[in-house]
Image (cartoon, rainbow, N blue to C red; front, side):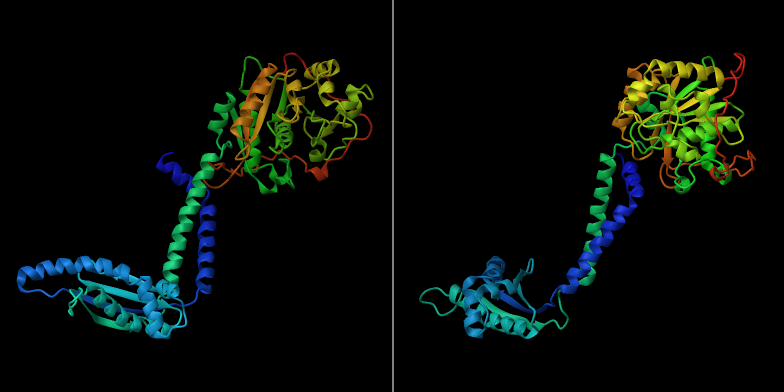
Length: 479
């Protein structure tokens, strides 16, 4: 990944980074609030070696600096801790004394600093005062040679013991700053990791590359589509409606030398919006003056009749079973040239029905009666129904949900279509976000096209049988 890829991942998943930072700040604030205040008392020692002359002074200085490093470890020794407890009359253990002492050898000097940190300022002072006395005595005892009364090293207190009146811990500013930085790094790491592991399709270019077919259009995400899925009434002039019209236009130019009359609309997995796409695509063709039949070939989870507000108890399955005639179940919709054949009763063998000879003959008869037949088929990967139908029609459209369908699913769906010899006319990238990186940059021209399509509530369901349109001439304009 390049730098711009990392920046894109951070910008796309900024909420993850923000959540990590806020979570770290909240945790740090909670821990800081529960911490007991700690007070520090410091004492500074000066280490010297008796010398004679300048040369001896230089050598003595080097010797003292080496001794300071050893004395830093001596400050936390068991022997000194026991002396501090015994002489100070403390009611704590030597290990607890050692845990409270923080030695520091001042670099390039002969000075040594000891800081005693405790939750009680009085205890901190008492330990530091006793430490100053017992540390000097311990050093003199260790540095005095046998038979001599003068130690080779002299240690003096030159500062303290001095108590810091303000608590040295906790440090809210430091803790919160470190927590914010840690949260930023964790959030960024998670965002980049999710970007690397995310194999979903987010662009039309990638969709076209994976499917090996043209992208007929991209449809923006619309939160109101669940309540108003069709591009009629108030939604007829929306950006989403224009997107479906663009798909219709592009579909007309897929192959001008070999126009298609029967089209299957399918997807890789459920939940990608294929039924809504098929319905709106049929509506967009009808509003352009075409005679269109929308057939619900999803015999497992039919949705077309529900979306269009039609009666779906009898339909395609009943026709294929010989229970009713086509003229009894084909229903007109709206005031244009759209006719709808619902799925009918849910059968126990959908694949067999869709692959039957009756289905082939039915499609042939519809080719002569309508300018185009659009079939809403089940998803390709869970069941084989769509592949069976796709092998009997002129072409298939693959609907892919932006940011959800994975690259492997698109590839598997395309392979399933080509395995049965189906012609993939193109793809539709559905539910493209309207904001952020890779968003749908559509325009709502607002010219008032005035198609006048009725809303679902205004549709009147037909009573009795309805005669479909008469066969069209061979010279009529095709889709």
